[in-house]
Image 1 (tube, helix red, strand yellow):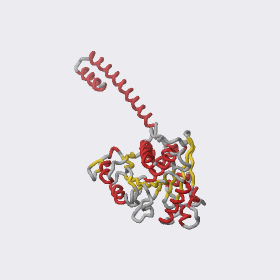
Image 2 (cartoon, rainbow over the protein chains, first blue to last red):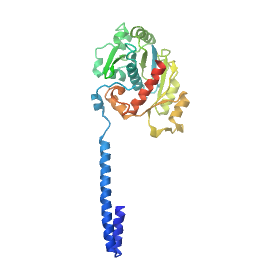
Image 3 (tube, rainbow over the protein chains, first blue to last red):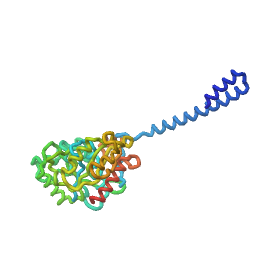
Image 4 (cartoon, one colour):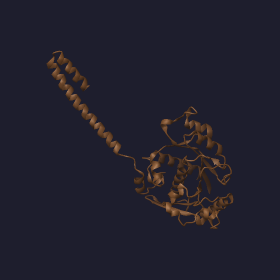
Length: 70
Length: 254
């Protein structure tokens, strides 16, 4: 959305609507910034999920024996 | 004493040992206050089977110890000298399992097996005796010696066919089959054109108990650990399914 508004602002500028183009440009910058931050947070969350790995054979070996759930 | 075996006919790698060992441990825990040795386990794999290795806890532990091979070879007269106790202490109390194994590739005859079973029943008095044997074909000395048979298959045409052909080989009452290492994403058999569960039901006459493929079971096996004692059902769907099957066994066999 941000990128589309950015392109639209350049189109308006070319058409001579510089004032409108400038405001659309500012809005597009804000959207791009917010979108980028959201993507970064999502990436970090995904990385956190990935780092919460399943136990390795070595970790299982070192675990204490616990009563089975039956 | 009831005698039970997990069977896949001539097919190997279906998870018989995983099922047998985990079921044995779960029943030993469940019946820990019912009998002194609630469960006995016979690993009949020549040259030390995986179950025996896990129960012994150390690959070098077989050194110098008598095993069923010594009984079969005539080195020891009393087969119970080749039995060992594995004991676990948990937050809900201690429990134990008694087991034996074959250290060498010495043929165990039907007469030997009958004597071992007789000794176990009269002196150890377990509720259940588990057999864990390598893939079996016609002429197995176990024929006629078991009370219950659990057919074990994987989503694999050859496993289903081999199990179907040999499921009546050792006699005994057939229990609910197990579909092991099931991958839900590949639920349809491309050969049969129907779900694997239906294939098993049509082949073996009963809807199978499904145990999903679980990386954690593989990890525990690499660590030579009993899966149900180190993994929680919440983290391992395989352990959850194993516990469900052990509950069914307890209700049916116990």
